[in-house]
Length: 126
Image (cartoon, rainbow, N blue to C red):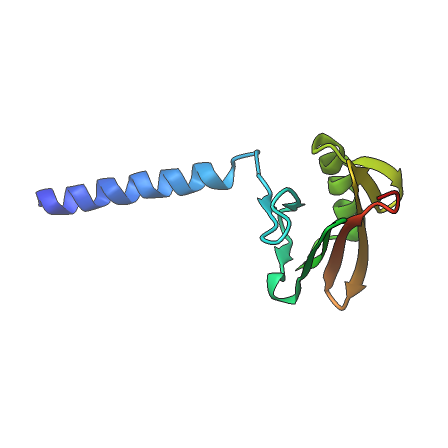
């Protein structure tokens, strides 16, 4: 009988913990495996196996993509807010600059998923 009560107690604690996690208003993005300072927004999954990475004397050249069922305008709004907080300055839609690097991203729709392609390359002034 005591064992049964302990099991029920543990089950209740576990359920309470899960329900609190489900209603937590703070959802933190993951960060890219190939670009550790680039957030991957919630709802998107990075396809790091398709990534391209080159290190050159002039700087790094990286391309990666993320896929998810997130509307295009939601993705755009997320990165318009997130990238300046990480030091990126917007130069035009989908393009940012920070120090000696340029970050560009494009968003396309494929059936029910959005595809987000990021690229980082040295600025042309180097």
